Amino acid sequence: MERIVIMIGVLFLSSCHQRNIRPDTLTSGIAQVAVDESFAPIVEAEINVFESLNTEATVIPVYTSEQNVYNLLMEDSIRLIIGTRLLTDQEQAILKERKQRIRSQKIAIDGIALITHKENTDTLLTINDIRNIMSGEIGSWKQINPTSPLDTLTIIFDTPNSSMVRYIQDSLCNKLPFGKNVKALSSDSSSVDITRVNSHGKVIEYVASHPNALGFVGLNWIANPVDTTNLSFIDNVNIVSVSNSTQATPYNSYKPYPYQLALELAHRESPLEFPTGGYPLVRDIYIIITDATGGLPSGFFNFIAGDRGQRIILKSGILPANRPIRLIHITED
Image (cartoon, rainbow, N blue to C red):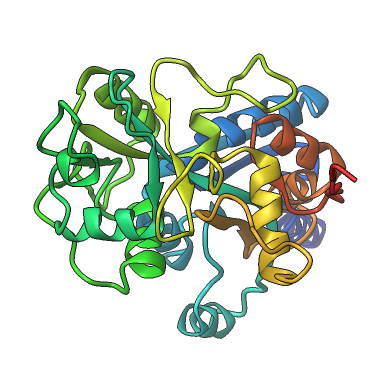
């Protein structure tokens, strides 16, 4: 009888020990990641390569609006997210109170692309034009170009609480309300719907079939997937050139090529050395983790921030944050 009690005790301790051992490692197991749907093409490419290198690993992406991404992290439903902002002081305080370690890393610099119908020849806009369009002060293409055959201007976003909307409202419009001509193709919801990965694709489809539309999408959605030089875009819509000047001309307006994003960043850091700047609508992309080190979320975090993950980002048509970028001045002299 005494021997049986001892054996039961050993089995109990063993089972407790087993429950404390994580079933995943840096390269195996199952992990979920919540992703701002703006970056679905990039993350899909990252997952495909990561899983091909680590055949026992499964990374399940949840694509949703930026607001939902950060809500999932704060609810502790998911411990690895990809979005366009760092955590606020309040969010960090909540996570630290839960004794969760926070790690964050800038992984890329994105460009916000403006797209128009192929029949629309007005493909030069200033930052001021964009502000006035968003406020409703400009409601017609004829206000931009009196000779335009188009009239009412409709602005199309993916969802009301997307990172795209937040960027335009915070960075360009001083948090003022948008005009009545601003529309979102997908209704925002607190629930996560993985099918909404196509919302940016739907913006492109809408603009391609509506001549009066002006759409906002992430740069990786319009990059030409077969162009390894990253110097061309998809051809079913026009890509708008944007200028920081008071009047847009072909000489001071830029398309969101990766090197133009780099030029804009260089201008912001050294305006005397790079006086003209580049494509002005740029934003950072971050990966944030609250999971303990040693598990698959950490392995995926390290992969994206590492050399191979950064090369995938470069190939996707946006600018990697952790690879050296060399800008070369070419002058007639």
